[in-house]
Image 1 (cartoon, helix red, strand yellow):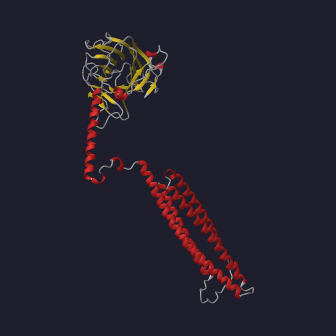
Image 2: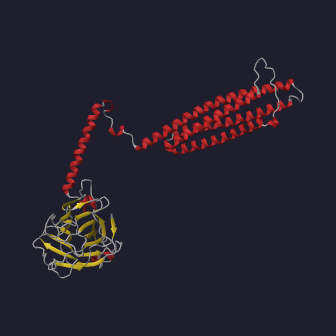
Image 3: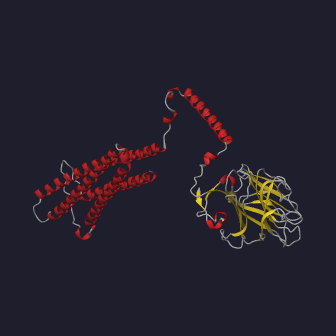
Length: 492
């Protein structure tokens, strides 16, 4: 919150080598777009009279005759040096308006009164934006700085010129952009800078007036008030920003140390009441649940990190079970393939023993190709089985190492990629086998021999169809499980 202001914008610090430190004080400020609450109140501020707070501004007075309104801080300000930046808009239909707007720093809240909607005989300082020419000297609209020790009565007929400590002529009505006033009290010097609202540049300030050797109360309230008379303007305040100033190199106390003792006692009492309430609820819970009596309540709840680790381990356990099932099914398929290969090998050996001519050579070559393809399928299935086995080992290792959860998951993904590559090779081999067996130029008329007593003869066509169907079903199952595991990984 500590920032360094621009030395050019603070005339009071022009003689110093460095600009003062500025710290924003939110308890003495307001601005849009969430200025007011649902009940129409302003946080840390109180409004009175005809003031109407909204989400982005406070309408101090509407453009109706004889209206008064004001807003004041709820807490007193006890800064030695401060700066207030006020953004407002004064707009009306006529060439002249009334009465004007005032910015206050006083020892009491002037919630209602004859001076621009606030109380007279104030103790502090007021910066008045007077829009109506009461004395007829053609010296309005004007900005005036008027101090009071609580004994003076404001000089309305003369527009306060007899009591003004500083003044400047500025037309602040009906400007295309909001008008900004920067009021700085630093080392007993009050400076007023004005942004006339002709450009959107928020830092385009012009010097208005300065009051040296000015002593104001140590504590007071900030406030804004406005009033209308026979003529009327809309007086809208868009923001009021308060900054505490300190000399360069001076450390500001932390905000917690500046809390009033009354507020500290109040918050401490609320905390103690809450703590007693919580302890009572803990005792009641332990009485209702004797099985957890003596166990700290905090140990019964799961932390965020524990929940995330538990979810990761549960997901890996599910993946582990799925891979075990696939491993078991691969073992069954391998046994069946070995049995089919052994049957085909026996059949080929028998045919070669019975037929020694050229007639049985082509079928024997075809069966040899089938056996070679089946052996290649067996090799691929063995590699696939080894991949599943390695995945099981990696998941088991990751479950025993809590700090290596991410690494285990990454390696599991790598194994699944390897599995997909092996399945792709198997698919290519099967497609090649189907192409060879389905090519009309290579078809040979084969008559199934008489079935031997044991084992029964298996036709080549039936054998190939069975292998293809079984492989397709297996690959479909593998792809389906891979999709389910990918969806489960997205959750984790």
